[in-house]
Amino acid sequence: MGPRGETWLTSRLYPWTRAEAEMRDVANFLRTNPQAAVLLLVCIVLGLGTFLVVIIALATSGSTTTDGEPSGTVLAFQGLMTAAKAVR
Image (cartoon, rainbow, N blue to C red):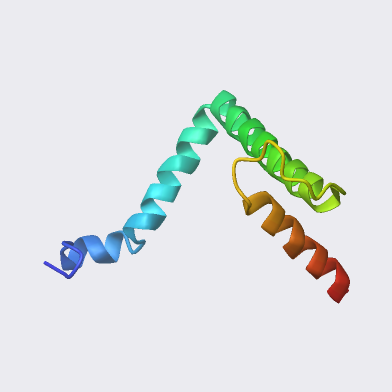
């Protein structure tokens, strides 16, 4: 047995690693279930879009008041974005 639990023959027949085999399984699953692939794509697009909208809204907001905010994290991030704009 080798370091990954394979024999000499299986390591020669299947040279890919466990991670590659798992990715191949995911790709085969998405290929056989296109509705799952579309759902995954929709979730990724909506998640990234929401993240970008929040980041853009924080960067462009002109208000420096902290009324109603749960902590100073939003204000600190806005200050960081303002400093990044000044560097450009």
